[in-house]
Image 1 (cartoon, rainbow, N blue to C red):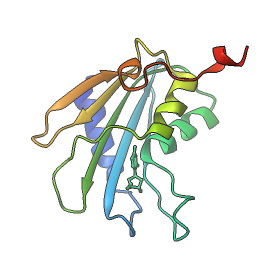
Image 2: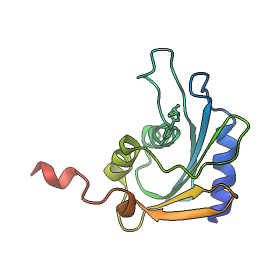
Image 3: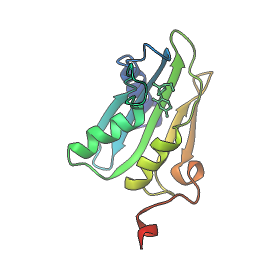
Image 4: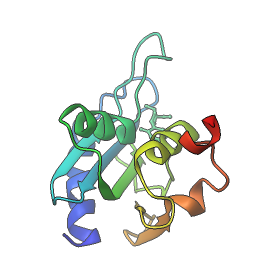
Amino acid sequence: MTPNELMQKAIQAMQQSYSPYSHYRVGAALLSRDGRVFTGCNIENAAYSPTVCAERCAFFKAVSAGVRDFEAIAVVGSREGGEPTGAPPCGVCRQVMAEFCDADSFKIYLMGKSGEIVCHTLGELLPSGFGKGNLG
Ligand code: THU
């Protein structure tokens, strides 16, 4: 699956975004090593803190289906009716990614303002992160 194909699935997933409070819509498409795609969208809540990001939605769908080996995730976010903002995953989502993904090889594709796809590794976005290894 190409980065662009994965991003198209993230854009589709963004259509399911439930974001009546921020009016900021996010979609994610997570590619597992066996070629499956798990999509997610942000799901907000009137009490605010139960809100879940699109990336974690995708990860939790995958892990709860028994899948734990991942290659890449595509993420797109925009204000309702606006252009993609190129926004990267929040810190909590990066931490969830770090639980299951290799810092050097897991790819995070973001969609920029002009529709261009920018790629980062997880290690670039979460350097020196806390992980299993730190528990001793
Ligand atoms: N959001 C995501 O879905 N992913 C992120 O990584 C950053 C933020 C959502 C949460 C909330 O519904 C909205 O974007 C505004 O913060």
